[in-house]
Amino acid sequence: MNFALQGDDVGIVEEKHYKLVPSDQIGADDLELYANRLTLRWRHMDHVPKEVRSKIMAAIRSRGNTTTEIPLAKALWTAGLRGYRKHWPVAGKPDFAWPGRKVAVFVDGCFWHGCRCKYLPRTNTEFWRNKIETNKQRDRRVSQALRRDGWTVIRVKECAVRKPSTLARIAKALRNERARANVLRVAQGHDAPDRW
Ligand SMILES: [Zn+2]
Image 1 (cartoon, rainbow, N blue to C red):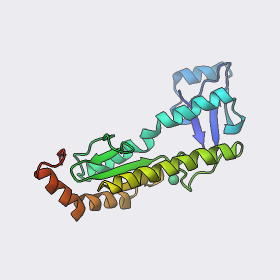
Image 2 (cartoon, rainbow, N blue to C red):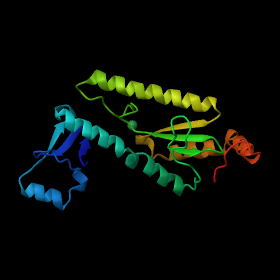
Image 3 (tube, rainbow, N blue to C red):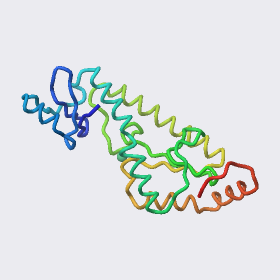
């Protein structure tokens, strides 16, 4: 599904079945829609019919990795921080994990993980507040479980993915003594090796 988002507003090409198109990806088909006098209208999310809204929310979830994992994967590559595994099967399935060093990196979408850079929707505020609070609690539980198990856990907010300080944190974690000790354990056959 395609759509455009600007804060809490969604761009919707109005049609019988609500075709949603991102403003920066308007293609030939969409121009045809315009030719048919269908308009792209910005609406507050709360004014979008329920069934359309849930489709948009699902789409936000599924496209999450284009604003979270993919930019970080590129930055890690450029910085020479390779050999990670994606969604390693430990608590929370970290987005990036160096299992040998026990370094786990999560990239958290700002909306779903309650970053201060996002506002709560203006209606159903309680519903969203609870949902996001539940997510934050889960994040904390996952981080704690991993740390108890000897992992270094780094949580990166979507809005901080491109900051040099983010890469620096990861690089530091990979080089610290704890990570090295874990690598030693791997050498002694206690753990699954990683490739880095
Ligand atoms: Zn943010």
